[in-house]
Image 1 (cartoon, rainbow, N blue to C red):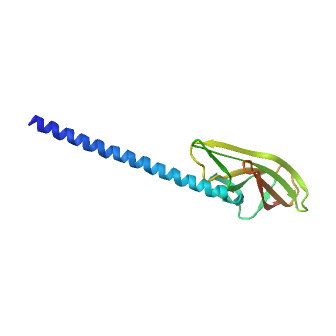
Image 2: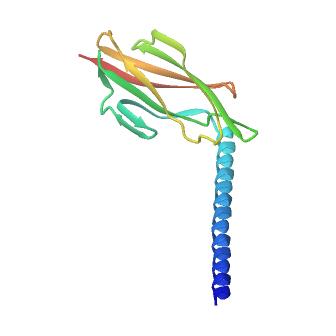
Image 3: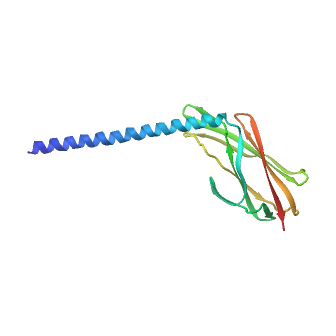
Length: 178
């Protein structure tokens, strides 16, 4: 009787081990499949045109895709505002299981006649080498004017993909009000 009970327990333990091991292998297979899909997305992005999407002048930014845009592009001197955007198709190098991208951003502030008031070259430098591909990226810039007369202005972003040696430009117009 004890022998039968021990055999049953041993069989149950083997079945449980097989089930648990099978689930671990299934999870690894799913993880591998997901990584393959991410690598396919990276390859598609690498062939796409460099760009900027969702460029917004904001009251606040929480994280990727979560921001509070201004209802009107009107700002006041001395108050903090933010620029939000998402770079599109930044080139990602894949090497030895690592994923590397690198881009910089220039900021140029222009008045309503197109005269450059401020120019910050390489104001942002994002160079990452990660163990998993980063498919979606967002960028924030602070905008705080300490002294500016009322009027219309343009905030110009020049995004440089270092690995591709390509650039793209986007602008956002705004007005300083009292």
